[in-house]
Length: 176
Image 1 (tube, rainbow, N blue to C red):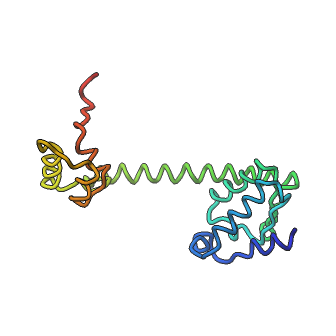
Image 2: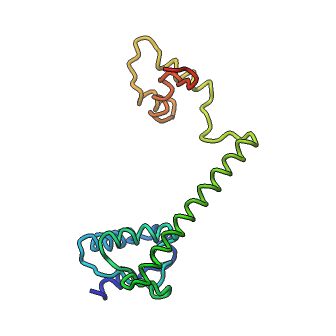
Image 3: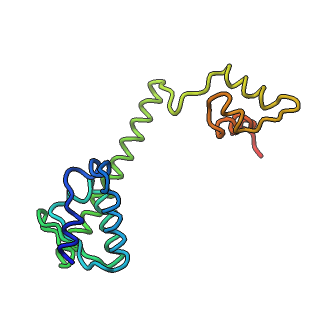
């Protein structure tokens, strides 16, 4: 059983790079499927960087294993969730992962606020007003036989964009 697991986890490079390699997704998914079928008691890896690219990914992976009552052993980090100390370390990693997520969210919000203060327009670029007018006239054409998808294809945009244009604008200042 361990030999088969060792062959399945013979992965190199970062997880992001491995995702591009043929067979990586299939092998990792097979590992998770075997875990879900309770064919494993412990997942063993040489190092944490062989499994996950960030603390957040690791905590998510460990949570999946924990829910299935499967332990994890990481040789280089000395993390062994079969012991009380290993379980405590796992919980501390969860706290730090949550802290990391909060810090990232805070930085993103601050960056968006600063960009707005500098007058930058956020989000996707708006459609050219001329193109939008052409789409509206196509939608309102008398005896129209084209559907939303055909109109979208004619103008080279998505059907969702045509649907958004076809709806009246929402005015937040008007009370219902």
